[in-house]
Amino acid sequence: MVFNKIFSHLCTIFLLLFFSNHLFALDTERVMTITLHASEKESVDIGQISFAAEKNGYRYELTFDDKIEKYFLSMHPFQCLKNPEIMVCHLPYPYQNNKFITSDDMVDLEYDLMFLHKKTGGYGIDPWNGIYYKMRLDDNGIEGVLHDTDMNVLTAPPEDGNLRPLTHDLLYKANPAKHWFPTITIH
Image 1: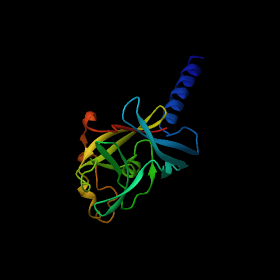
Image 2 (image 1 turned 45 degrees about the vertical axis):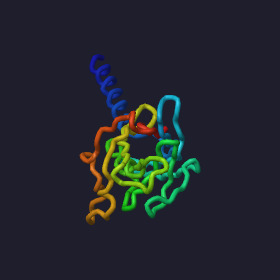
Image 3 (image 1 turned 90 degrees about the horizontal axis):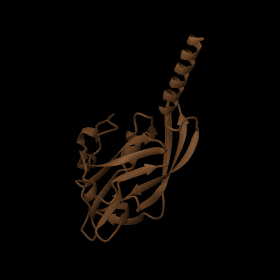
């Protein structure tokens, strides 16, 4: 009798741990909204992401909304949001990306959601002003916290076989007060 109760509790704990490590529990396909958050009162939905279960993780596809305006900056097209003081522009990752995540490896998604910031009205755009959202699972999906980084490492193609030239050790904790969108969610 005692053994059955212990076994039952262990099975429950195992199932909870097993499903908490799977991104969306039993879902095989799911579409979620990508939202940039300035504060509790100000947020902007910028697109959708479709997830499909595959092996031990999820393959995904991003689609950005028309809310993000197109600009031509520093001889390259960007999609940006702007206010009177700052522009935040999506930086499409220009090299190979497998577009695959697991509960403990979200780097491909982090690379697809990189941004640069600049002053509104300023000339050009500088990769030094990189915005990198380090992602983690939360109760409703995925949350990313802004980190500053110099994205100059992306101006030249990485060595063959190096799919991740911008590593987490190149990230710097950002001061949220100095940024328009300190967090991003995918819910």
